[in-house]
Length: 285
Length: 337
Image (cartoon, rainbow over all chains, first blue to last red; front, side, top):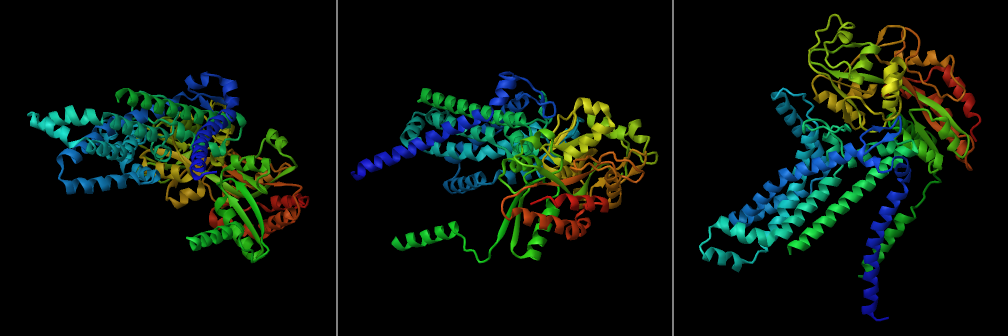
């Protein structure tokens, strides 16, 4: 067999392994959660009682907690990240830009459990102080703290990818715009951002994926209470956190299967979001 | 290139086939986290005493311990809550519960200016049910006539992960409060009516320490380590008792009088004026019939644990088994082979 053909088959096999892994993962999750689906059916997705003693399980509070905390994180992180990426590419002196870019990438390398500790020792007392100021029940931990810690976590991703794609905007385009008499703001708004749009959206979805699946830091600050509450100051719970918390001590089969069903839902949600991101980016190109 | 490969290959081979200098016998166990400090001390000391035996223990939680021992992936398990009949039926052989030490779960609180607190059964259940929401409510104040309790809202902290500690605590609440039994019940994790969840004993201790006007429950040792104030709980004789070696031992000896043969017994809300009401045994799960040499080694360890091991318990915050129970256990482990 020629080397070319060997190489072709080898990489094909590697590619298939990746696909097979994803399929196996989905299959395993489905197989090990079938008790939950057959007992609760789709009501598993929209009921909100989580009672290991009565063996009644509904995943809605966890789905809500995961989605809201991630949305909150993006709401806080996207403007900040985008602003700093624009500053670093368009306005900052080269030296500063490079130093900052390095530091931001360093921020991305902090393990999430360390961020969780920072959350517990700095963020939570801070949130509690604000809550005390407004005379509401001061837990400190809760949805707001989780959103904040997640936003810190995803900030470097969005910043550093956005910076890369903004840097890839061709210089002649920008110079042409400026030559036409545009201000720097108009140049950024009408040339840089539209050109880099798909890359930036990609960065945001990557960040969203990370926020959805984040376990450790979130479980340390979210309050771990499976209740749906409109207030961001109230404690909440996320899908990844409940799995991490309860899997080790899940003694009954149905409890175990319900936790794995939550994993399947999380798997499904991340797939849907990634798929949506793909479609959106393709549409924009 | 060739040399690097060679080195790599040798290194790989070395990791795959560890050089055995000693004929080591290794036993693997997994389970409860609550007795982990004493178990790791025991296995360490036992290995030192016996030279050729090594016991590995993974503290993955009681639930995990029960599951793994049923599946036979470990040689023994460990749990803080006795196995149910249903679970015992699933096991491929006769599984014995061997009590090892006793522990206490204590209510810890963070109230400015208060270091002592008497909690009646009614008050404790009320707080965790979310019916008593302020510290100065009559149900709490009544038992603490001298203390000046704040009008602040109570923040309840409980475990977010399933745990034998939780089982012991809610087992007590279920016994003293019919309403708790109806609303939440007993289990390693329950549907908490109120409160924040924190992971692990250390998580609950940390959260209580940090949050003003909070109350939580932890193993006695964690309250001691974290310098947290823990309350006296009203026992079945109506006395307020703080957890210590004596009060826990007293609860155990009360239970020892009518100890069932399989040792699956709850000693929460034990009788006797000195008994601390939220205490529990913790058990090793051992098969009666074991493969090859394993039974003999296990039996030897269990005997050592009952004779030597018990002496190490108090310094780690556990109460040793009462003499009556030790005698019973010795009889039971004779059947291990």
